[in-house]
Length: 100
Figure (spheres, helix red, strand yellow):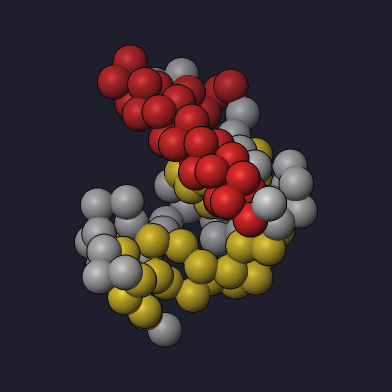
């Protein structure tokens, strides 16, 4: 099933899994560019609770990213990963502060 979220992302239902870092339930994914793309093995994703950088396995369940996953990536992509991780952390901090 595909759902439009906020007019921005196409959300794809995924096999239910959990973040290997914090245990947060993961059951959907979207392409960061808003494309109608289904995740593929070795694609990168983020936990929206703890901002862990994750990788889709062959069965589309996730695993924690390992240092070896970064061997062939560009500097710009590393910057993108760090910026995205920081944006998730900042969003979660503001969300928690607003709820208190």
